[in-house]
Length: 248
Image: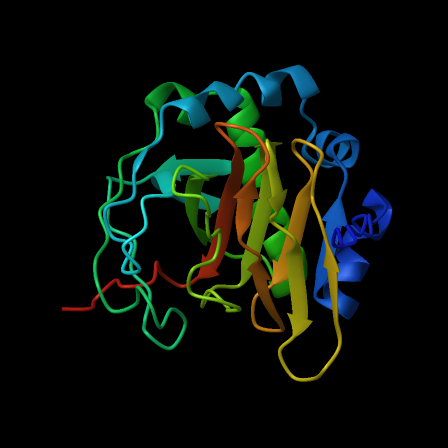
């Protein structure tokens, strides 16, 4: 029997901030992302070639070879986005029991991507949303480009399981999915039993989460065709500092 696939519960752009404040999550269609971030669809699509040049993730503790990624960090205040020198990604074990507590140095994002006007539009739009929910302030932003593939028969988008990230805002853009089944998004309230499940299929559709209030995961993917993969862009906004700053 084929598992049911549930359509994303899209939020209207004019309800985005109220939805984030009241419900702690929202999902935007690709058209809504373009309207919200004031960016053309063609400019976003021009960024997608990056996902064919991601580097292997050498830190997977489950022994898998299914994840490739690149990473970059920024400080955003208002409409000003400043890249910071390449730095490791770090999470405490309280938020990532599998890979927490260690510095992970991933390949940097391409300079031409960071310089693209469409990239600036996306990152500053996310920072504005974080300020609308949490109050205006500088935001410490981490961006992760992921490809999960099915080379070994199964790929795990969230090998750490259902989790929070230890930040203020989490954004998960679907970039592409090809030749796979699975990859269902699951979102749960951190303080209760309510939750929802759906499958993102539209390139540049977007899941937004108030990380303090919501737990999330994506189910494993399996191949339907050779070369099956799922590409995402995950961006987090955190107040105060990057995770791991000051950690010896």
